[in-house]
Length: 165
Image (cartoon, rainbow, N blue to C red; front, side, top):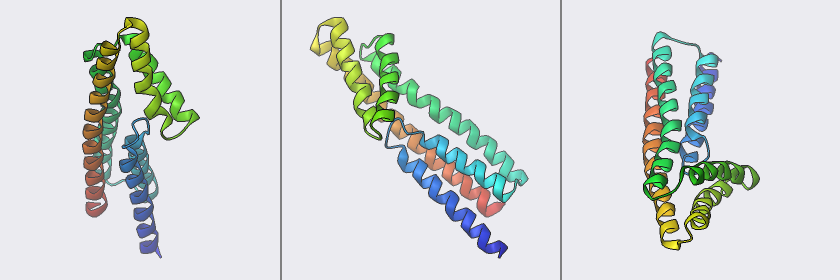
């Protein structure tokens, strides 16, 4: 019976890991946090080996890095494209609000659209506003690649924990 519970715990944790990993496609979905929570649940329910604790510390550091890099790269991209810090901050707020009001695509539409419109309102120039929009989109794409890579690495570390622990 204990082996059956272990298989169930592995399967449930794997499902949450995959939901988190593929949820990274949606920019405002906290996929890396979901993966980290799955690993935390696995540790609590399955027990903490020494290797498990060490791996969980690395998973925590990766989770922090992954959630930070997301906003950082999008903001840097928008800033390089000419967006003001105010537009970037408001785009983040509109992205969160859009996700809450119309999940999962509300934030995907609200954040870049708000940068485009706010920068046009600020500069009265569609070319410059479009440059800020492109910068945000470029940062968004780069952040996806980095977050997805971090997510894959987190899953590989968790598998190591499962199979060696």
